[in-house]
Image (tube, rainbow, N blue to C red):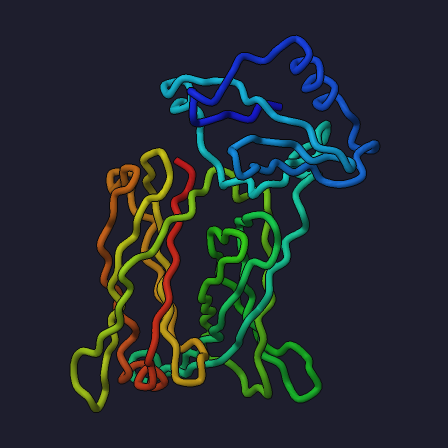
Length: 293
């Protein structure tokens, strides 16, 4: 187990004693570990590993920028280390995805006969998740499922929320609708969460049947260039319920973002003449992520 430091002037070569301590730590069995290990930084910049009620000063190994740049970057480890001696799958916490809201939206004109089950899903777990499958279900008065459809979404970082939408064509009469979500923490490997900036909402077109557009910037906050990124933008009404969800991407690898670079996007909600609830849109939210190359 190595932890790589980014400030070489603060790094010293490991002493024989320090190397022996790290060897002992790395060979500790999972059964003997009573709590997750944490890496913390003191106000003076010193790093410590907190384990089993004690603290141990951590002196990271040095690494050149070229050697570091050759390694693929995964999502950040937020202070808690995986259990040594176990696989990533075994140490990954079970996904904890929360359905924040559920609503339905019926189509009109060219979308007549279609029903969308829409809502928001939040990742309340400690780790990122991928292979997110959202199943929208229609239920009768007794709670029996009488219709369903599913859509796949790529990635959610810890604490992140996304808008979701599942389309059902020619649905039966129903009493209520819900969303069921599954995901796989291991499938998040290699994904990079991207930042959203300057997000704005504007109305265009006929006021009797308006259309709304969301514009903003996708920024790459990581230390390496990324491609194959996806933008998810969703639109909400006055009741804070999702009305419409738009997904753009994944873009081809040729559309790459260097570290710190931005991509300007402008995404339109479904026009109100095709989705009547869209006339009540008053706000928008967005996330973006890059897929493994």
